[in-house]
Amino acid sequence: MDVSSVIEFITRKSLKTFKTKGSRASLPKQHEAYKRESDNKGIVFVSPSKEKLSQGKGHIVTSYETLQEQCDHLTHWTPNTFLGGTYIDFKKRILQGHTKENLKQINTFVVDVDTKNTDLFAFFLACEEEGIPAPSIILETPRGYQFYFVLEAPMFLTKESNYQVLKVANRIVANIKEALGSHVPVDQGCTPFGFYRIPNNENVLYFNDQQTVSAAAFIEWSKAYEKRKRKGAFHVVYAPNQEAQIHQEWYRTLLNSTHIQQGHYMSSRNNALLTLAIANYASGRTYEEAFNELDQFNSNLENPINPREFKRTMKSAYSGRYKGAKKEYIQGLLDQWTDQSINLAKGKGWYKFKKARKDRERSHYEEWEQDILDYLKTHTSSEEELTDVFICDSQAKLAERLGMAVSTLKEVLKRSTKIMKVVKGKGRGQQTYIASREVLFKCFLQLRKKLIHHGVTWKAMYQAFLFEDKSLEDVFELFFLPFEQWTIEHEKRCRTPMIC
Picture (cartoon, one colour):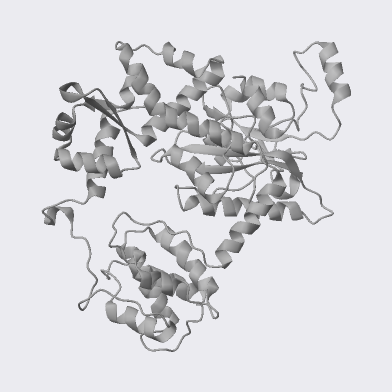
């Protein structure tokens, strides 16, 4: 893979091919490029380190020739092209001009996941579930990953239209982040059209130059997404605990009630908000997840609570003083504001909650699943040899290693969507191979990266790895076939216009 082709693909050929001065290209090539290219090319800002960037330091690049020479010595750039730029202090290289109003065109939307403790395959599945096209490029960063959604054709900004395109683009990016953020830990605070990691010869994990989407398709998706939100079709991220209060009918009923008013003792809109927030806290949701959902609930009310009071109520719910939403408060709210007959749990006081694991004789399957994932995280790796992505043994010995009954292991592997299993052989010689889906997908991306670099087929890639036991090749194929097949089918779908 030539990293310059990745850079050109992202920026949609909006820079000059060669330097204006000091180019290493031959004069005929420079002359040909000069005749072919228009005068309205733009620039990108770059920086050699995060520390320098935090000080506003960097330099301006106008050509692909310069980017190709410097990309391995740079850390950040602006993938969206600017009209021009200058320096506040030329000697110290303090940049000026990377403002939204100075954008020439928007080439790509970038989503930042600022942690490596995430399932990359889940990001692709989240895109599919939300109707968002798959990313064109994935870059690995020191702390996480960045996903580039490259546009089929740039969105150009004009002063005459009062930068309306920028407002639309900002809205699209906000909706993409919000939609994906309900599935994976997206950095919601990342500046939409600022600096991101620059592609180099080491950090490109995934590159599909056939995957672009028109701005019109993104606009239609964004409209459809906002329409779903207005209708109150919340996407709820359920906690593993099936007894969680946010799973219960009363919670969804109150969440979709828009006519709750103030001034009703024990059944006011403030009490409704506090009750819903406590249910989120007791169900194990983060403050940010609860805040986002209940902020939408408040916005849908005919008479919303003011922002200051909303934040005060949310902080109170997450103060740790409450164990869960009380039955009498819930019943009062239902009686006052709904006409549905909802059966609440029997008994008084607090709803039943899962005891701490140390206080129970039996563990829940979700906890056993997490035990297996923790073990796999310690004992497998996507960075070493290919055989290190899984562990294998008889099911009896695996259960012994994992500290659980064989029946429990079988049930967890049957239910789990996070653990992949391949069984090989029969009778006493039967071997069970298990692996974390997250580790497998990271390994899969590494393999695709090697494939792109060397231009080899998947079958040749299988053969290229050194297996002491050649019989493991079919195990490898069984593990990776779902990822490869999914990618092929997904890429085929993405080559046609997105239907929202």
